Image (tube, rainbow, N blue to C red):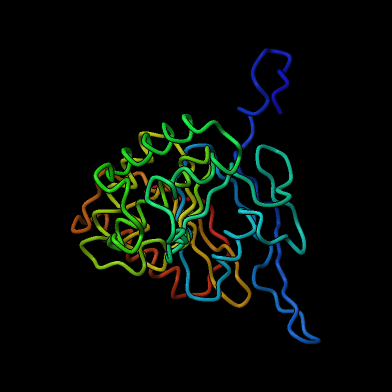
Length: 271
């Protein structure tokens, strides 16, 4: 993918970072085959922040796991930089609601785990861990263990670990769902700051319409039975976004109506 075109432009720059093409995913239950996701098509450009919203059972997490390489499509194609996603890789980092930290490692050791596992020199691992521990504001807690951290701090460690692993895409499955409202709001702001600074591509799964509007460049609406993408709404509201503004609330009502109804696919609309 690093070949040059006839005019000298890298081919990679002409491709979306992620290209989901008519993807269906079925799971076997006894003698039955159940479709969790049906005919999903979605293009994500480098640096975008996209939120997937929808009710339980609409295939949000299934789609995220397929992008992460943990599941394979039953039909269709899923490409990163034009190449099929063949399995998990450090270029795609997952952040889960339950953090997934190693309890026997310190904050710095958790963050440096990926580079260390890839055989990077010890000094480089230490420098990388320090850089990203600092990035998420946990410098004072570098030598602490997960059980000594709050939920919000653990989630910051999980984000730092993904960043330290050279991920181009961060996949977040309801990462703030178990946190109190105050911590969730603070981490939303911190995540947006990290995203703006690093230019990462983020796909964020949430049930919360307000959270999606606060965070995303695009909100992708999904419906259940089987899961389908029914709308792709581009959010042009200036950041930071005010949940009390008329524009914000108009968009919230619009997305709520999409979630509550049975809609055909809607072309992207800019708000």
